[in-house]
View (cartoon, rainbow, N blue to C red):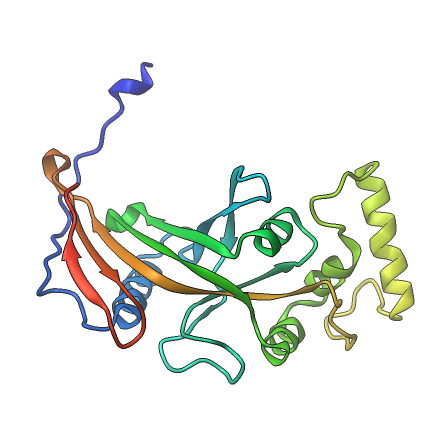
Length: 226
């Protein structure tokens, strides 16, 4: 099979300047809700692109865990898109060097993309504590056990580390509930956007692209050529 011959004709919907909500966060929430209703695979999955201290880009998929349609908690500088991770990971080091980043959602079931660009800040301590406490026990143990992005000797070494963490916090192997603190190296990030683009696939590759630029209270809406 010649991959150059693989093509999909997009014709499910249209998007115009009059279709979008004046608030891009409300517009994004609507699209996300529709992706969930359409049973899209991992509807909150988003590609996060960062740049390291030497201006080398990297990208990976993470999961959206918060969207500030309303005003964010005290301590946050603006509304944004929130995810959680290890602050000592590759992306964590990148963001410590360059706080600008980009996100991209792709919902093929709806023939849609959403692109977001902006500046990243750490989520508040309370947000990170609250979300950590809501996670399954295994996920919380994993946050302690995994030195994310570092070389590990083997799978067995990683699992041994998890057993050590279980013993430290006295968590039985079959525990469904347990209380222990959030690791200091783990928490949330919020991308506060200066650009949010909504992309709707159309026939003949004449896709609709409506972009919001600026920021809260001062968004400008324009159409981009596909």
